[in-house]
Image (tube, rainbow, N blue to C red; front, side, top):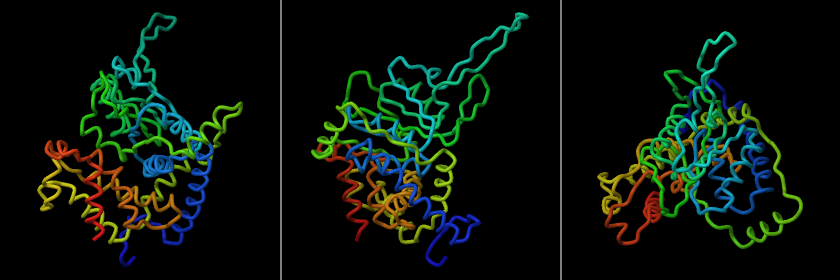
Length: 337
């Protein structure tokens, strides 16, 4: 393979290229279907889809009313996945997510417990306003995201495959929100910032969504095909230069590694999961954009959604009005040279 490192997939290059070509056209169809319903927001759609294609979970951060819920519902339809939605509230209990044991009594009066599955038993779970639930409930979701199974009364229940969580978070510091712990944020492959639509997109929203007929998106994939594409992404070769760029970017974001700017501004930096996320998402982004191999540009484009929730600024940097994205922009600049 020369300068490429590849996971040993047991497939020859020709087979991988043929499979990738098919995946390219399917992903292009997915993009086209989603764009019938979600106007503008290309970056948001792209990053959310990249998280799913890479087999991970995404955290969508934005003020209410920016079609985050609509995006998740649309993705469920287009990717052919079962979708459930949970609205997080301060009084939501872990059993409201996971499910609960109920007691049954048969005609002879014998009693037995039966597990009634909660909404987490789905392929695409929308966790709305996740930071409004208590830490106990957040940790119940966290276990399912990390381990793909849950344990109730000592019994083990596997979640459906594929299983993806798309959580939304309101960025406004409201009364009664519980910020997600760092360890939980790290479980999200990407943090996707959802901004206001641009003028052209907002005009289209007004014209297309206030009439009699709403546009509908159709199914392009199903769960089995999505799993095939996820496996294919893990088989795509990554050039050594891209691996080096990932390592130098992630390591430069950590204080105590000899980077003066980082030492000055960053309180704690990203762990190894950030590098894993960049390795997977860079391949997915290449396919999403119609290419068969990832480039250093993919790494730089993904730096913000991968790193921003995995690092924190020092008090002094925050007092100066700096934001994490400013620091990441500086790291990308360094990484280019």
